[in-house]
Image (tube, rainbow, N blue to C red; front, top):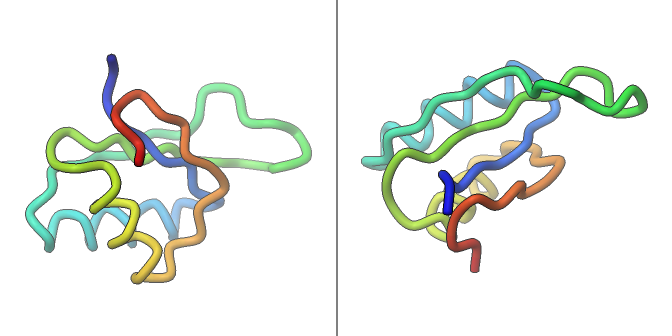
Length: 77
């Protein structure tokens, strides 16, 4: 089982998501997605290093971080 992770549509949303998660006690980082779909353009993946994935998802949604997908890797509820 890998790290829980979330795909976002832009570097702006990736940075906002990392800031929100860090402010709420999570450790997270982002990387440019290795093979973004041509129709989606450039995407980034936020990797969660600790904490509950469903809580992190809730924080991202409440913070209006536009997610393009939950990529799994952990216990996504």
